[in-house]
Every structure is written in C-alpha cells, then in structure tokens.
Length: 108
Image (cartoon, one colour):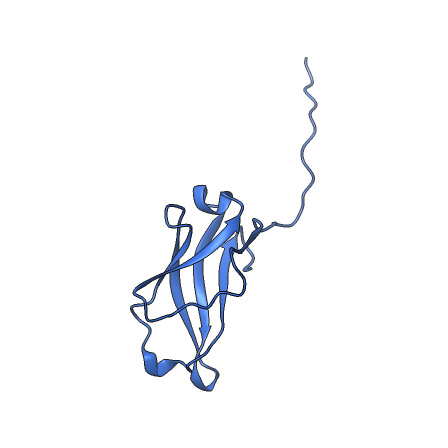
C-alpha cells in the first residue's frame, strides 16, 4: 500500500485583480456610443474569466442608478461601455460612476 501526501494552498478570500484608472483625473462623455474607460494593471481581467459580469453603475437624477454593461477590450486599452440604453435626461450634467464586477462569488 502506498500513501501520497501533498500540501494544498491556504484557503483565502477572493482577491480582485489590481486594476486602476490609467488617468484618474480624466473626464468622459457618456454620449459616445462606445465609450472606452482606460485601465492599467492585471491582464488577468482581460484574458481569463476571473472577472465576470462587469458593469458601470452611474448615479442619475434623484438618486436613481443606471447599470451599463461593459466589455474588456485590450485592443482599445480598457473597458468599452455600451451607452445605448442611457438617455441624456436621466443624468445631471456632471455625475459619477463606479466599475462593478464579480470575481468568484462576492460582488466587488
């Protein structure tokens, strides 16, 4: 009889790939039909399914939010936002957005 013993890696919480804005002080126009949000960092977000269901959450008028689907596109240098379902009357002239995604199970 033989016994095989090996070591398993420690169980740790999911760690999101280190992504950051290419230029954090940039301003973008949501009226562009295929807006690109440039990011730098881990290429794992582009070449694997590690990051899934990414979206851009925009704060609208009266506290409402709009979730816009995004797709990683390394050829264009970031995430491409599908802005077609967004209407101009939904937003204030200046607003903020947050990139959201799943990495494993918990939302990030």
